[in-house]
Image 1 (cartoon, rainbow, N blue to C red):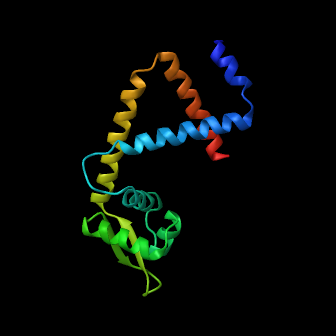
Image 2 (tube, helix red, strand yellow):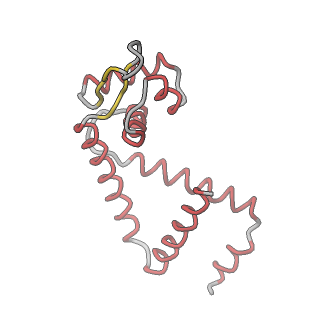
Image 3 (cartoon, rainbow, N blue to C red):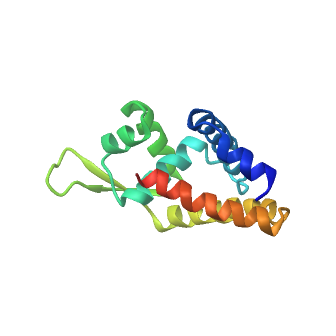
Length: 149
């Protein structure tokens, strides 16, 4: 065991929580900055991702998921619709409602964003030693377990 490993085991949980939160936040911010050329906003991309994950949502459900007000979501959805990334279909039981879902083009845009982000991160990881990559692999498994708890 290296001295760094021994030190990491001695970090109190509250301090480790702060260190991890900060590192994850910064890494997430940097990965989100790695974007293909395009003018989708972070908010539009997030809404499109929520639709892809959920399959389909009402505008209200999407606004709640994204934690924005319905009028804000109306504007976001309108921009995504203009680009052909989202479609509206009638609600099966409530004629006053619509269901939003990502189009095939929307799925392709998200796949392109994921590819660019994965490529950026893979380049950064390639600069690490094999031992550091092994450590991050173990950390990823642990973080997945913490996230599922």
